[in-house]
Image (cartoon, rainbow, N blue to C red):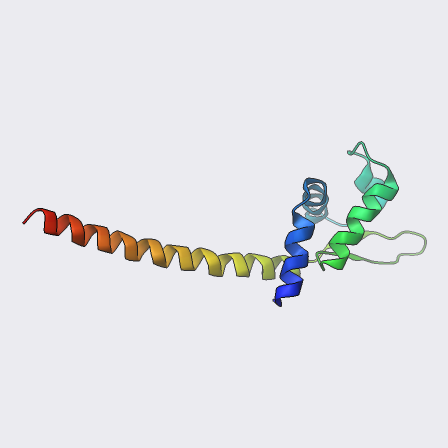
Length: 111
């Protein structure tokens, strides 16, 4: 994933409302009116949040007559997950190295 796309994804996910919308869309497509129902927020406000998610590539809109259901874009979420996995793997490698050094140091103290 390109750095700019990753930045947009994380900026979009930084907002709790957008994360909640994406969680709902992970269950299946929904219209703005369906998405706005559980929130104390106007439909235009929900639409603005959805626009940010769409610009980040996390949500897509399909035109179905007069309806415009939104859905999550799993491919983009996988890219974010994969990037996080790479970071996690790096941390794990570093922790294993540190553990080995600490075990070696403990062994030298016993001498």
